[in-house]
Image (cartoon, rainbow over all chains, first blue to last red; front, side):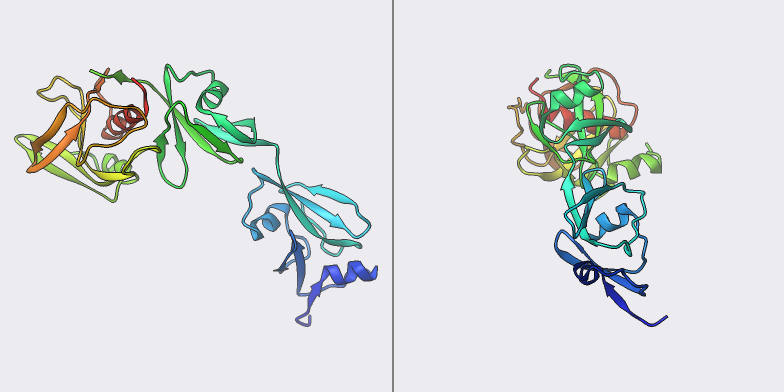
Length: 163
Length: 117
């Protein structure tokens, strides 16, 4: 096969079917990426823009104005007629992990109490620890946490007091 | 006193280096550049962990190389204590039980830094 990079936007704009290529030029959020397969997964396309499926959705954008959500494990046919590129969008309800179990929560600023409440615990009895670019660290109970999806938390019992 | 390798490895996630320092018959754990919880100033400092009961009657103790400005005011009742040939600071806080591991002792004391009581 000749070493041909196919720009899917060009074919969508001309209303033509996309030919086979060795790789495909694809726009995600307006930025061009070269993809070396005709059927990448949604997750791999999100990865190209440094985003994870626990926080973002990938959306196919067609020349006729249609938009379709692509699931992370779903394979996309880049040769699909009319496909001009992809958009990403923040999910509103996102997954987080607390004590190694998955929970769902609305994206945005959340209190420590709200997160502890997901596992039926309170700040009077438990400390919330967040694992963020490092080991789990305890959080002050009055702190508001910016939840975007994929956050990892742990809890531990309060275990003492001022002597 | 020896600490299992895995217990030392757990601590290394929280600091740049861990080494044992002897004082009498006891071995304290020196934690170099220990990361401190959000809201603390400075964000890291050297620390000395005593994951066993001491003469003070506390089941464990964490000493800091400087006084930390924590999210809630603390009663710093140990000032310039000389241990393992260094000066240390600690705030008044007593764990309710003996820690099962050095990491548990460390996390209990770090959590105490972030709590109002």
